[in-house]
Amino acid sequence: MIDAKEFLAAHPVPDPAHSVPGSAMRFDGDRGRGPGEDGARGEGVPNAVMRDEGMHDSEMHCGVRGFGISDADRADDGPYVGVARRGSARRGTGMRRSGRRRAVDRAVASFPDAADAFDPADAFDPADEDACREAALRLLDAAARSSGSLRRRLTDKGYAAPVADAVVERLVQVRLIDDLAYARDVTRHCAGRDMGSRGAFEELLRRGVARDVASRVVAEAESDGVFEDAAWELGRKVACRTEGLERAARLRRLWAAGGRKGHDAETLRRIAQELFV
Image (cartoon, rainbow, N blue to C red; front, top):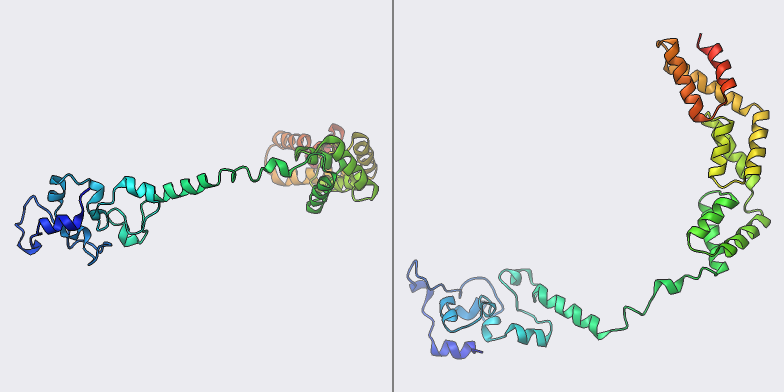
């Protein structure tokens, strides 16, 4: 390895001001503000001379590299300050990207058990009833749910089915879950969307309401005329939207909308005779 100070003493550097224009020899003494003693990069050592002396490219263009610090030495010495490629001294990084990568690798290697210090799987116990109860309360705090929907969400989170059943049963006992009241609220919501009895029944099943509870609530709403009113409201909306069209086209729109909403055919037939004449 060539020592830069000894090299400079043995090879006096010519004045850059007297260099011949167009010469193959290029001087870097006045370029940039590198980490050398007087801010000169490479202490003014011409690149051509460095190459003739067998110096590696990584030892040129930078003041500290000109003092004979090889890549192997830097790898052994760890992160280093003031050694950078062209332009990095202006950013003030102090070391190359590869040097930072090696420093991180050594830090990780010095703690071989750091990756195994915490295992997320160890923090979750499918049989933890207290944690399951907390999860159920958070779900209920976000939105009202049926017992079936809550049980399905807890099992989807990874809790054991017996644990989820026990938690849901306890919440039903303390009346934090009421499937009947929940089903009635959903049925009123469906009627507000102009849905019929069949559509409301399917929506209750989708939300986890038991089939017998859903049948009971839908029958109550149908006896009160809730779905009849919803069907007539839907018919008036279709009649208003299709005004000016042929009667056949208006009837097709009515039957299509009524079928999607889950109304029965008899109710739609009576509405067609009254509104689409």
